[in-house]
Length: 125
Image 1 (tube, rainbow, N blue to C red):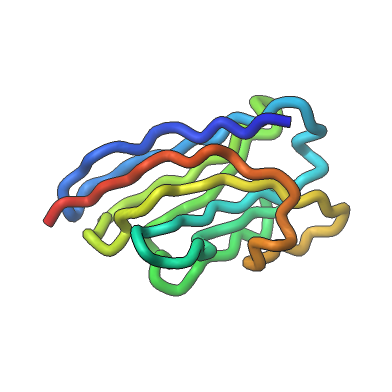
Image 2: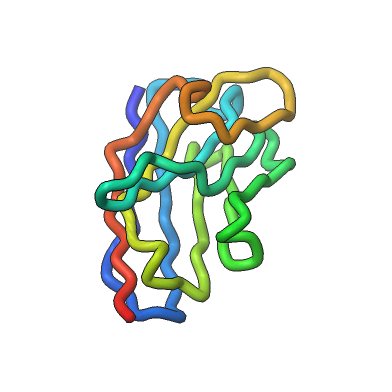
């Protein structure tokens, strides 16, 4: 199983980035997908998740209204559109896959089965 996250970079505050995560080696449509982030010196935290069907998007409070998670099961890819970026969004962003047959999504990182390698997002003020 491989999750390849990309799309990170350096952006000014107020700007936008779109992260992508391409999955291989798993039945992608059987997995809920999540994005997490880890800032320097901090614990890895939940950002957003989406069910296997593309429904039930769920966001951490600080990104609601700014970030949008989506997926394309035909392309085995999950996306995170990030708008109105703030310096406090600076972190390494990880995608993760959670095998589940229902439409629930989880913000608990320990429930995720597979993780990507991370992509760095830096927001300058």
